[in-house]
Image 1 (cartoon, rainbow, N blue to C red):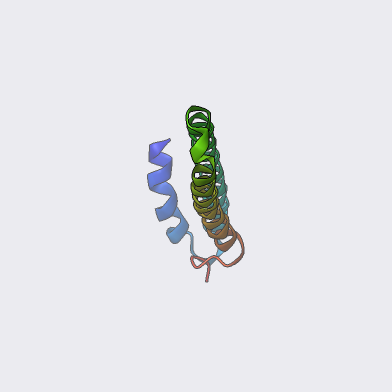
Image 2 (image 1 turned 120 degrees about the vertical axis):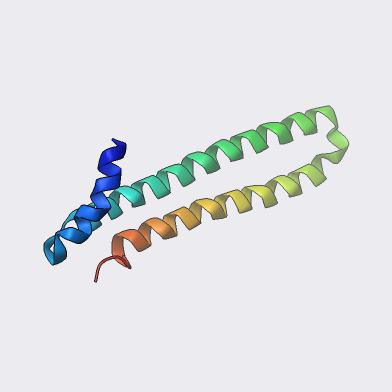
Amino acid sequence: MSAAALVAPTAAHAAGEGSVWIPALSAVGAGFAIGLAAIGSGVGQGIASGRCIDGISRQPEVADDLRGVLLLSLAFMESLTIYGLVIALVLLFANPLIK
């Protein structure tokens, strides 16, 4: 598996203009970009929400403060997922590796 990953970029440049390696590897990279971004963000949001619920159940008087911090942190986590989506879209539709 690792040997194929090391040989594929050199094969992409060696084949010239008719190569299909760059678009194929770009599609794989786009899939990994959006998949890992979504998984990481989902896990982070789940952990943050669970900790916020624990905090509110222990100290109900600080529920408003925790809710505000939670919403802000969820927005930042979701922005990282959107960055992954942007990277995936660039790799698929505006690929800088394809001339």
